[in-house]
Length: 436
Ligand code: SDX
Image 1 (spheres, rainbow, N blue to C red):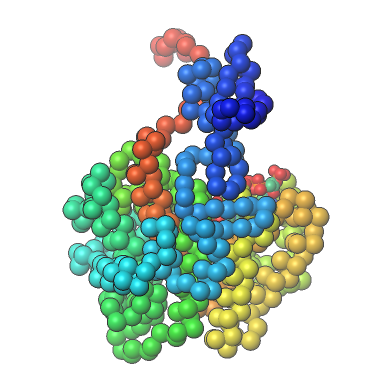
Image 2 (tube, rainbow, N blue to C red):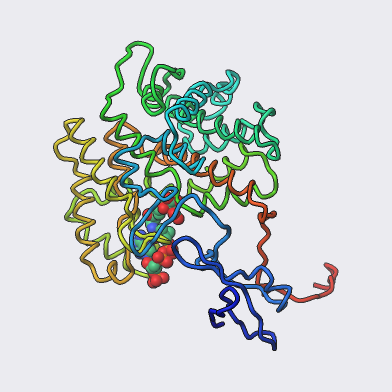
């Protein structure tokens, strides 16, 4: 295949295949790689492309998030993640991701009022929890309870109605903190704490997690700010596995609550959003800086399935810009909590130093990703490791909803239906049992 920029027409890519020469249009984005539109490939050649894991495949056109993996750049609607983490709030960032622009004051007030007044869940949803064991993984609960929202909110499941899409998206963003906090409280055997409309989005979430009827300690503004930053960092990330899951599920017209539940299920995997829990468990298993070389050796051993959790990324081949902010936030939280030295942080910092100077990791371009430091921070804030991915899902719901809106409104989008390279049996006839 060759690319040529014809002076008159748009750039085309030429492919000699199936005994003929074929041309395909090349489309340029605002920034980043251009794409070769191969949607007519099968009709022209009778052949499919083959790209397991979609490493070289753009599944859609999007205006929401841009990642440059080589430069370590992450932009939400053009704004660098570091600026948003420092200067914005999670709810303002949510408005930006959903609508494409930072809100005016009146726009933000309307949005915040709407979200705040949708934070309660149907009272009967409380009954769902009693069916789970107390030691159920919060992500198992989130999958079940979020999927069940479609049984309660029939008035916002028609994906072809723009108003119902707006309401469903806001309900999901508003209720995820409540459901996540309920999953946490249920695991503790403590009563659920209702949302408090006098608190902002993130302070309300921390209050629902850590307040108890017997005492009403105020939420630390520093911890609320740190949590808010962590939510901003996790809000969206282009066409990652769970976002692609939400898009594919939604492409059939399924209701948004069920599709977000599918995204939660995908995020749970340790190679994806489950890495923050896995990374902290790995740091605990390593336990001491003296044991780091042993684990680095395992990570480099092709015959050992062990991976350094929190390291590497399908797209980032440079430092994950979110990991830097996460590391800073980690130190802020430890300082606020008066935690002088955290042995896990010592292990993490030394592991990062060793890994970044090791030939294997340099050659394979493996850097810490967002999950490497988030676990230490969340543990210091009082969350058990099993809650880490639930917090990731809470924040990523904004990105999933924004990408869902974009997909539904994209006229070129149709039901997703990949094909395959078939290497099984060709036609053969049935043989009766007595002849086998
Ligand atoms: C998230 O996609 C997203 O945007 C995801 C995410 C988001 O915000 O949505 O950013 C969130 O999921 C972050 C990633 C969290 N996962 C982990 O931290 C788990 C540990 N990381 C690995 O499992 C791995 O790095 C992946 C799954 C993240 C990426 O897998 P790839 O694409 O197969 O990695 P690669 O092709 O870049 O690997 C290159 C080489 C391979 O070796 P070779 O086959 O070339 O010999 O590096 C090796 C890999 O085996 N490798 C590792 C490694 N990660 C990759 N070796 C040791 N330790 C690791 N962590």
